[in-house]
Image (cartoon, rainbow, N blue to C red; front, side, top):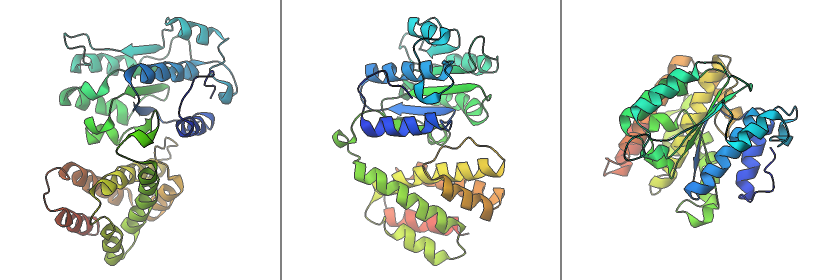
Amino acid sequence: MNFENKEYDAKFKELISSAFDSGRLPHAIILEGANATKRLEFASLLAKALVCSEDEKRFRPCGKCANCLKAESGSHVDIKTVMGTNKSKTVSVEDIRRVRSDAYVVPNEAERKVYIITSAHKMNETAMNAFLKVLEEPPSYVNFILECEDKAMLLQTVKSRCASFRLGELADDSVTKKKLEASFENAVKIAEAISSDSEFEMMKTLGIFEKDKDGLKLALEEVILILRDSLALKNASANCLSQNIECAKKLASGMTAEKIMKAMDVVNEALQNMQFYANHNLLLARLSSRLKD
């Protein structure tokens, strides 16, 4: 991907470029961190790259084709920025319903249609729920970019259908780069324990989180994406979201679709209950038991 000499965090650029250039950019992404101006700037750049006509993905946006020129001027009909039309300027359920209907209309000029959902963190629960079906089963030519202050403010069901990218340095946040990298490794361990026949292996794996509630949350969010990818792979879909595709492939070959869906339900429930359980060890014990039940 061509960043047009714009300044972004090196790790962020590496992750986005790897996904975009390989053709593995998920159909729906959450763009969080930095400030709204910076997030919208990049969302516009990515939308431009998605509609660009240049053959080589690593050179998109080329800035020269008709699609790029229209995107630059803000007049491309296949790029739609969704902003709240109510008094509070938040995206409402009516706004999302219009997006949902429009998404099934094929692109007019480019090969893809792109929807930039602004201030996604301000959507209410009804609007987010209305978004779920099109996020789960989108047309093949659609991309959604959810511009968001913090993905923690989104419903878990929405987050599990999107890949998250953080714009800006993680050093300024409560979640460090080291924790983020550890979450990917721990997610693989949990996923492998789910497919294992050993209940002891699951207890041992979750035991490392006895005093690390934040670490468990990060790992489980990645586990959801791995499970979701394994289900997609079983259904012959190449639309993967996690950072651990090889792990997803192993689960897809070793587990039935029914077991994968059950595990997703259990992990989703655990994530939703984390804020309510005063006893963290009890939550871990319940999670271990239900995953191996």
